[in-house]
Image (cartoon, rainbow, N blue to C red):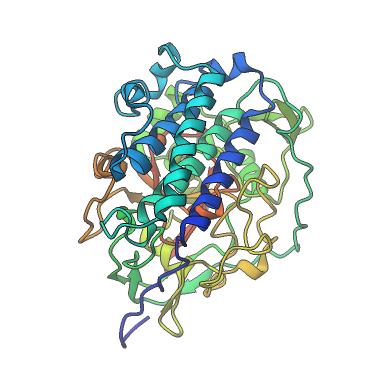
Amino acid sequence: MSGGALQTVGPGPGVGGATEVAAGLEAARCRTLALLEPVPEPLLLRQHSELLSPLVWDLAHIANFEDLWLLRALGDAGVGAGYDGLYDAFLHPRRTRGGLAMLDLAAARGYGDRVRERVLDLLHCDGIGGDDDLRAEGLVYAMVVQHEHQHDETLLAALHLLPEGYAGLVAERLAPPSLGTTPAERVVPGGTYAIGTSSDPWAYDNERPAHPVEVAPYAIDAIPVTNAAWADFLAADGYDQRALWSETGWVWRHEAGLQRPLGWEPDGAGGWLRRRFGRLEAVPADEPVQHVCWYEADAFARGAGRRLPTEVEWEVAATCDPATGAKQRHPWGDGPWRPELANLGAARLGPDPVDAHPEGRSPVGCYAMEGDVWEWTSSGFDRWPGTVAFPYEEYSEVFYGGDYKVLRGGSWATDPSVSRGTFRNWDHPIRRHIFAGLRTARDA
Ligand SMILES: [Fe+2]
């Protein structure tokens, strides 16, 4: 948008009172336990990948985080201070957690139950009360609800890698059909746009504050890159064309033996199969590609004669209306999520066809900007101007400026409470176990 006052995103949905907070906490716990329920305990205790914790470690860590923030940080004695060392994510890198003397499943569940019972007692007696910064607008409750859902997405990433399938972990694939459209790229006019938010009670510190950013005109794909497009990249030997890869990407492509997205295998007839949740299935042509690392995404974009969008370009295309200057919380507007708008919440345990949610298009006409797959951007993870770390300093502070690339938009495994147009995710450029794909862009 050019000229006129800069509009920023509205306050968004409030966190609500004690009843809503209790319901949000309960919904998160139901989801956690439902994900773990089909899996035999020995597999829950095992380290499946050096990138992911044993699933039972996550379960007790979720309880410990709630103990720290909804009990002890709010003045209560808490119920499990003795576990702080064991479940501190910064003391124990993921690859080492399998060797820890962890609580078993029953003990981890018991710890979670004891914490939750005390939290609900306090909510019942005091409400979300208190006018301290932690409780203002329910901020600390929003943080704990989101923390559990974010770990649930990590649980899904681990379950995705299990060698065997379990009933309950493979959903009936009743995805909405592709509409058969292949929308062209969208051109976004240059101007000054509002990035971030100052008023959304669900927003983490790294999304704050809202601030103006000058953006040059650009064009961005209306849909994420599909599996069909990735198969074309493979057919054109994209993984072997040195010119498409950055220097570090080329080194990593050889070191790691990258040849195709994680989980893909040839079907013997020129097509592709993929392994997920212990099952082998045909790769659906019209879904967004997932399980590619940043280096692969960067090479694909170059192969298409394009580039990855910057993080700011991604947010503008998802949340800004260049015609009116308005900024929205979501691509579809400020209203709450509905299943028709975006594929969030793991209802179908996989992505939908890229054009399956036309109602959820952004003001500039981009599809699937929330849900389906996280999208790699060209940007490193840096502090927005004016960000003040609060309340959980380790959430972002220690990662700014590191070897990370920003991902935007949430995935099919992301809970709606964690999905909004300003949400920022980041990971190392070599990571492929997350549900990440891309869309491409170019200068206009
Ligand atoms: Fe955590």
